Image 1 (cartoon, rainbow, N blue to C red):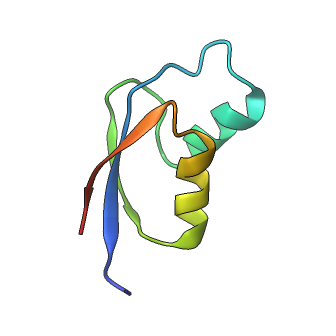
Image 2: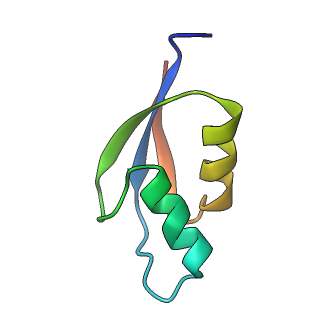
Length: 62
């Protein structure tokens, strides 16, 4: 599991969202619509994705 990664794309705007949700997007490395980021597939990253699941989508998991 050491080399597992997931690609996350931001699909929703953080405008009018709670500050913690905006900070979670920044923590994931996302800050603009349709940006993609390759992240390690860890429980912490999965938890962050779950928190903002209405603003992001998982494009690919390897």
